[in-house]
Amino acid sequence: MSEVKQLPLREELPESQTWDLAKIYSTDEAWEAEYQAVEATFSDVAKYAGTLANSAATLLDATKALLELTRKIEKIYVYASMKSDQDTANSKYQGYNAQAGALWAKVSGAIAFFEPEVIGIEPTTLAGFLAENAELAKYTHFFDQITQARGHVLSPSEEKLLAGATDIFDASQNTFGVLDNADLKFGIVQDEDGNDVELSNGVYSKHLESTDRKVRKQAFDTLYATYDQFQHTFASTLSQHTHGHNYLASVHNYDSARQSALAATTIPETVFETLVAQVNDHLPLLHRYVALRKKVLQLDELHTYDLYTPITGEASLSYDYEAAKAEALQALKPLGDDYLAIVQEAFDNRWIDVVENKGKRSGAYSGGAYDTDPYILLNWQDNLDNLFTLVHEMGHSVHSYYTRHNQPVQYGDYTIFLAEIASTSNENILTDYLLKTQTDPKVRAYVLNHYLDGFKGTVFRQTQFAEFEHWIHAEDAAGAPLTADTMSAFYADLNKRYYGPALEFDDAIALEWARIPHFYYNYYVFQYATGMSAATTLAHNITTGVDGAVDAYKTYLKAGNSDFPIEVMKQAGVDMTKPDYLEEAFKVFEERLNELEALIG
Image (cartoon, rainbow, N blue to C red; front, top):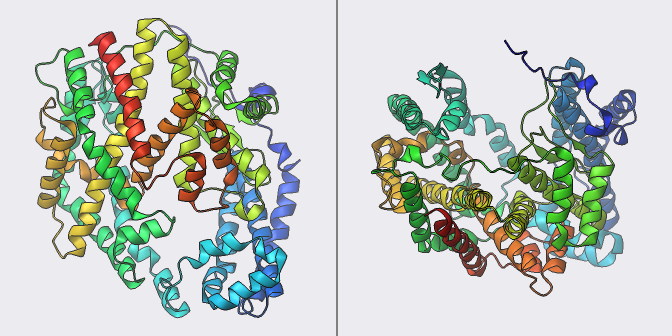
């Protein structure tokens, strides 16, 4: 028998392949000293409670004290969490992570007075403070972000009651999580080699990508048979959670749960409405892609379990990490020398934890705090997908770098709505580069399909989810019962409309709503679709040399939270309240679909 290859231990890795967390704290002892100092003094900020309306000077002092405290706790937390992620079996750093989380909770409680008290300052008084104190005026938008909730915040005692009921409002979501992740037993299925495998949500996803249709169908049928048994329980959890969203929106004087959720991130409802309208107008493109899949797979009937298996085979491209770094620098050239210099700094100065080691957290992410490098965690494998992962996470990290080097701490972060645009723009720029440099039809087909599948899953599918999410909230608000039967009937019609006539309808897919955790997130999923669409348009403008596109894009990368997200994107050249950026994104999708049809159709 061949020897089983073992993952290296953390201490066996070459230093050059690991991130340098000593730049955050030179030693663990330095972290412990900072932790103890913050733990001993964080409650000092409470002395400002009840005083914010006294004077401009007092408000300035309180604001600076709050930001300094959160700046310290973020740095403490980032070090602890990344130390834990690099080896989750290390009990010392598990302990650090738990300590940091507990301290974060204490700090959050200590500063909880701040936002309600700022909202409580009379608008004319606050405006006077900003006019009389030039240093305080630097925080104008910081206060704008807080006071936009004015009129939707209850009295301190009422807000305290609602805050104390958080666990109650979250109970249905928590029940869903426990049931879906721990208690459900999906049974046994066979893999491609005929081995018995216990089915889980993760195994299911892998099996749907199998080239063996029997494996795909068995996994699909087995999984949904389990959801069918528990459909009424899942209907109850989702119904109650939706009702909670509507209740909280109502008591906070919002017209709807959607208005409430989007107000929290200052996104106009027109952004949501425009997305749904445009996606529906362009569903014929998705129908074409589904029909192409049916043709290439040579199936008399295309079923839901056939939507994820590869249709182009594996790409012949393979990159070790060194080759991937060189390729990333070539691909990202359209973004300019200053952008490439930051990428090179990431490569040279150990921002990146590259290879997998025993106990290391899986997946990939970009992380860090205002006072740290924007680190990247990878688990490198020598393939094209990992090159895409590298440029994706680099997009996040360069975004963070530009923001932190161009904004003061009060604006030194950015919202989720903006975050994925930078990373996905990089993926789109890489796609364009590969299509310009690769001539092998098989490679081109793989790259095209990689893009089209990503667009399908991110723009079309997440908008489908968003439509369902809005429907259940509207039904509940109107007093209509949300039962397993009513939700399944609506979801079935929605699925038919989205995927078109080339897809044979499987009754079981009507229950898909029961297994999607995003339906508990309160109007979150549509942001995946807007982000991918904006990124497609921005990257297209950059790679086709549209005048001023690169400078406008970097204005967005440097903006942080210095303006509301919609205004930041306007500076980048995309007005997300209008359909133009979506229409441009669908043009790119159609062009690439045309080429893939020509290559393999």
